[in-house]
Image 1: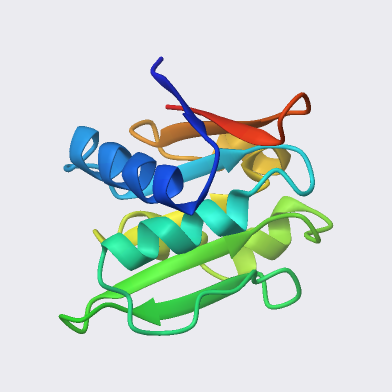
Image 2: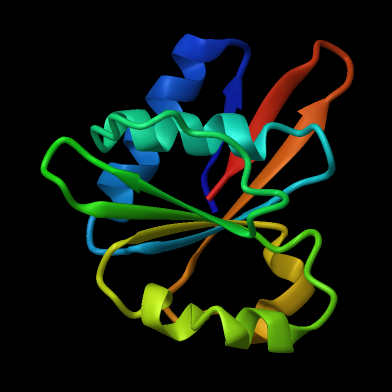
Length: 138
């Protein structure tokens, strides 16, 4: 696993580029980290690098947000935090999204990790409380 330290937005942008280059064939990304670690912020950076023209925000209450990139392709942003059980995920047709070939970014994937596809990219974000930087491992 590769780990990069991000002390600011420039580092975050560079980490997003690294992840997208390293996993250029991958489309499903699971982001693990405690509350406030920067999962949504990192997804914003990934979406920016993908050319998303929509406003990227946490889909905490909606469960899923759909964005369009500059090519008109869909990018999906999931938040599993408020799901009560995996039936809710099944009801929204998660497999259609995960196997669509479109980018899918998932916050709080540990709640239903068994439903993630085999080729899912795992990204872990930790806060370094000494300097408030983020350690992003992928």
